[in-house]
Length: 80
Image (cartoon, rainbow, N blue to C red; front, side):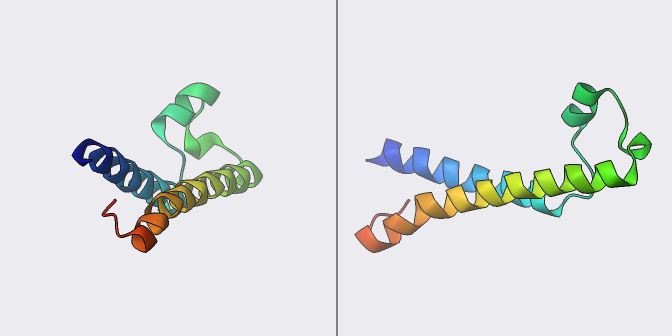
């Protein structure tokens, strides 16, 4: 039971942190820059809107997943 709690807690915390990072950032991550082989400063305004929109959608997905993992434990009395 302690191992499962640790697994659930790790997932909730990491998904919350990653989701928050993706939602509140104002540019893409260094690994995004590596993939498209350009710097954020060289990306056009319309592409910036698109990238930020996709990142915020991904961030919302991470946060929703964290909530989906945590909420059932509130009703079952578990401490995940």
